[in-house]
Amino acid sequence: MQLSRHFAISALSAAILTASYTPAVFASDGISDNEIRIGYLADMSGIYRDPIGPLGQDAIEMAIEDIGGSVHGANIVVFSADDRNSPDVGSSVVREWIDERNVDMVTGLVASSVTLAAVRLLEDADKLGLVNGAVSSGVTNEHCSPNHIHWVYDTWAMSNGTAKAITDEGYKNWYLLSADYSFGHALEADVERVVTENGGTIVGRARHPFPNSDFSSFMLQAQASGADVIALNNAGGDTINAVQTAGEFGITQAGQILAGMVLFSTDIRSIGLENAQGLQFTKAWYYDLNDETRAWAERFRERTGSMPTMVHAGLYSSTLHYLEAIEATGTDDTQTVRQQMADTPINDIFATNGYIREDGRMVHDMYLVEVKSPDESADEDDLFRVVRTIPAEEAFRPLSESVCPLVKS
Image (cartoon, rainbow, N blue to C red; front, side):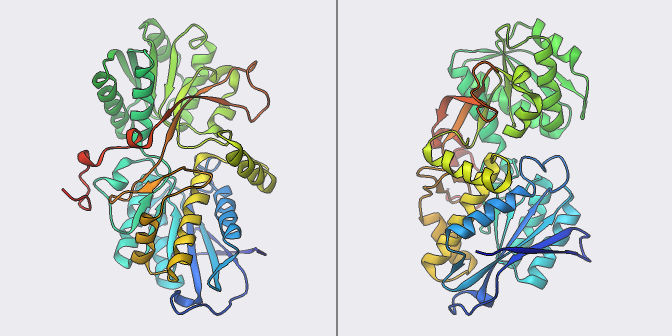
């Protein structure tokens, strides 16, 4: 499919909008406007630019190409915007897409605050949201709706998966280092709950300012605690700085495990294997899992010059599943398509036998990985080893603990 782009400034959002398009053609009566219109809303210039950002649109376009460039003769149009990690900007963009462009589906949705604002608008307009970037498990818990699906990961899976898997491996004594704001506090509480429920003990804890550039004193305290595991309940630059400091102090080389709660392969590249070696954390997907993932990742790299992250893979998977549902039903009606997506297992480069629950959570295997040492790494893309596959039913919050009103009691 031939794709071209043009840029314009939105009067409502002041965000940069781009459109990918091909000449319009007539479509079946079941597809509105003779087009399938997708909005990609993400952080294009801030802290999530590298792991998600502009390359996420390439993943979406790969899915469009793999469906054949159109569905039932309907052209597929992609709009994209930089949400600037601002709920106000994100809301303005989504409102304009709904009111002026009649967008059928919005994907990306990275910062939780932006995501929650966007999915409320989508529910009011009966449009579909495919959440790939946001981490908050509240997206399909207290904030669930019949108009969005959470695809890649969430805070429950990232913290529960890592803490339980490492504790089950026999590492029982934990030290909790947390960012001193709501996100860090929530991760800290989740990790403590999982560790103690699985026979572990919290031997010490500290909270650092947000953001923080000097982790020396915090890492010395964690090292002195004698804990088997140091949990990093933070993200982004804080996690990168903490891991780099731990590397300088030789913490993992001395036998302690660093457990990161939210990490991307792009973070590991920034940290470097010398400092990140031995770090364990949970991933939703990794490009070196099998021949199929490697082939898709190589195709992505040839297109973009970069290996894909788990969110890029999720964007491809969720978009393809959405388009296949339209192909199967012959309509882009939101509820018909969502039901078809829920009725159809996900088997692709991202998931094997994945499925969408009634709360909108896409359930799939997760992976506990460990960062390799420089000597173990065969090349610049050989970053991790899989320590343990976390089965789908174990990876995500059980429905018995859900407060989502869509879940049948």
